[in-house]
Image (tube, rainbow, N blue to C red; front, side, top):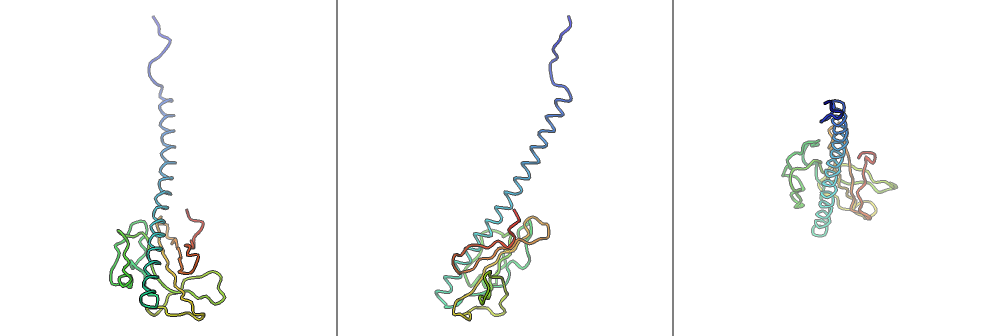
Length: 172
């Protein structure tokens, strides 16, 4: 007796399943990569806000803002670096939890006729009062979280509304 139905799958059917699984895996890995980058950016936003709170507390107690050089010393990239001590961040009482993916610094920015604040390094260790009597300080985070050689930069000032300005709006 000859059977008309064969049991099992053909080679083409198995290959099609493998192709579909491969396509779904590539899409899933890409989405996971984007999710991971966004979580590292959230780390930077949280740390910038923490630095801002510590700066405002320091200002209330001491009467001036404290600037700080970049910490860690180099931009970490896709692998986090250990937070280094001995900077003005220690005087502020700020230290991030774990090893950061971004490098952080505190400096000033000019406000004379400038609608969009930009970062300037301050050669002294504190900013007392700007020309108009306002304190102008900016916290910046820089990082190359995807390892492509392009730094992602975010800037936060103490001035209202206190929103983080993403200096690379097209990334992620």
